Amino acid sequence: MKMTKLVPNMLDKSRFNRRIHQLSEPLYSMFCQVGHCIKSMSGASEYMIDSFPVAVCDNIRISRCKLVKGKQWRGKQSSMCRYFYGVKVQMMVTDKGTPVEFGFVRGCEADVQALKKLPLTVTAESKIYGDSAYTDYQIEDDLKEADQIDLMIQRKSNSLRKDEPWIRFIKEQMRKGIETAFSEIKALFLRKIHVVTFQGFLLKLEMFILAFTFNKLTN
Image (cartoon, helix red, strand yellow):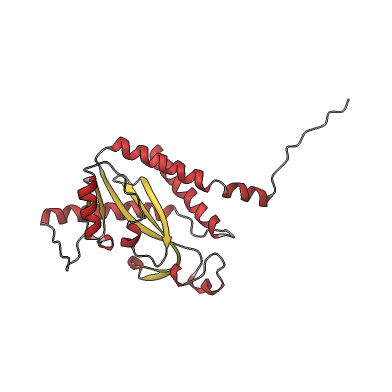
């Protein structure tokens, strides 16, 4: 008797993409659980916050971009003195550079405004370091009073709150750590992300961040 070879039904590209898109919330939930475990096991520790831009298209193609529309997606990358069109990834990492919190905001949104959207749920007596773009005295006071968390932001020359020399030195050293950690993330990031929807764009960012986090934990 002739045997019939069974061939499994393969998903077509469209259905496969729809199923992948359903993973967005589970993936983010998984990252949050991993981040929570890292922060819980670390106890009172030191963290760093910063942001990096991810463009949805080259500047020359903005008028033809279909993923997003509007001036609110145009931002400036101060360190490189250039503009981009897309989103900012706001991220908090451990002192070893492992991501524990992240969020997406529009390109035009200032870091200090985006700071209010991060949970910043760390153990009491922890310290969170960031550059002067995150200056908000009210948030600093609220975190210290309510959660005993020190928001260690670098001071501008005209700051109303001056740092003692030794505190300024510590912040400068931590700033170097921030730059190193985020340079590592950006060096591994994809130069181009091929998607047809904005939701797919954010999903691929989530997948990269989750993969990067697991890679840091296993190295």
